[in-house]
Image (cartoon, rainbow, N blue to C red; front, side):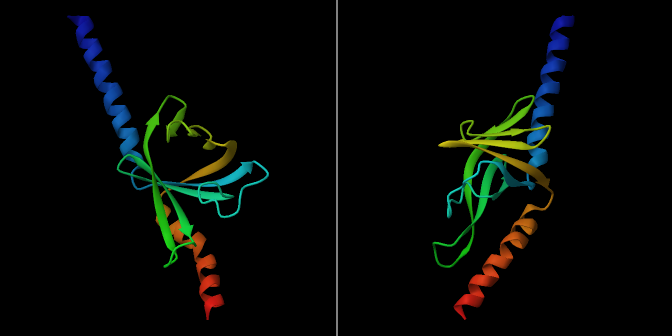
Amino acid sequence: MLCLRYLLIITLFLYTTTSFSCGALNGKGLECDLVDKGYVEDNNFFLNKKIFFYFKNEEVYQIYLDLDLIPIKLREVNLGEFVFTSDLMQWKDNKYLLNRKNFKLKINIKDTYYYRCILLGKPLETIVKYFKPTIDDLINNIN
């Protein structure tokens, strides 16, 4: 009976810890800078020198500036649910692996890319601020 009680307490603790960790990320994001891969294709929205992610409803969204469609605007791509292990946060069938301790991101798409990331408390403000000069330049070139 005592063993059953301890098992129930441990199970409850693990469940509530995992739920809290996932929920704590909702509304936050990542800003990631390429650190290890000399070449990234131009106009590749998923792999650029700087990439952004946003966490919403326990899913990961990548935000990018879409220059190919009109109107030009920020778009989001749902990369699916994220999963925690003791050391990693992973998503998109383990193609994205974020080290939870040092915020280094490893992306395995065709080649392997390494990014250094920072956690953003207000990601949408940071993302808009980053892309604003590019948008302003495009508008000025049209006029």
